[in-house]
Image 1 (cartoon, rainbow, N blue to C red):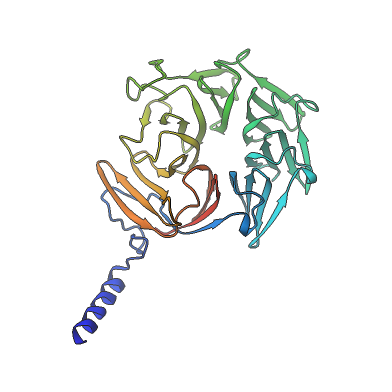
Image 2 (image 1 turned 180 degrees about the horizontal axis):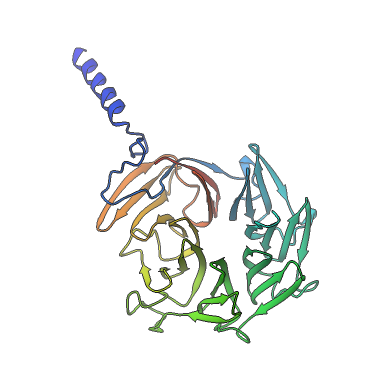
Length: 368
């Protein structure tokens, strides 16, 4: 009995001194357990939302933080989380289509723009206004991505990229006819540094300069669609799925790996030589110095050198977090974990991350 008591006191003392949490990371500020791990955000205390919790559908395509509310695009409509309550908006409220794939919020006006499977919708002053090929000059009704760039709203669609001037109310359409695209199927668009980048299916990345109105393209120089023959020579693959720009860095997602471009040099990453969860990347969101990568096998966060990846178990709600720095790799148990490993969208504000998956929405809190 005495021995057990002494052992119990010892364990409690070690816990209080080290501050070790059940997640496996130290609680004290910026300390890390792996050399070179740095301050890459790590998240825990995950909470998952499904239809049972108020979502209109379990398949979540996109998520965007808008002030004190969270906007979630699902297959069954727009879900808005505010004051711990969910509100759903559908085509009955004026949205173009219930399948909402992309969301952005204008910094100029606060208007919410929704890219759907059947058109583009603006939510302004409580009113939904929809744009389609029939009532506007929009290139296509299937919208994969939307981004607000000042007064302009850019969309990536199944029939080319489009730029809508909210002042003149006019559309400009860009396809293989007037831009260096392989075909008019565009997957993603982002803006920054007075430029716009378009992920063009089979055509790499198209850069549009707002000042000169000129295009240039970035493709895989080796032209091989099977493997990346020469490392870091350009985009790792011409089939690009998402682009995101932050702090002078352009991140390019493909179904065959990840690329990072600093304006001069390209760097490629793959699941076999980095901490990337999978080469099959659905979406990327760059926030500050970090890229948040949505893959078919989990969520990865990187600064280009170190990696933190979140993976859920197949048979229960728990999972693991994998930390990779150089050749060093460590795994820690995660309880609970993200809602599903097929991650489609992500957004981050302050110390909270929201993750859209093929089965539910996840919310995590930064713990380092």
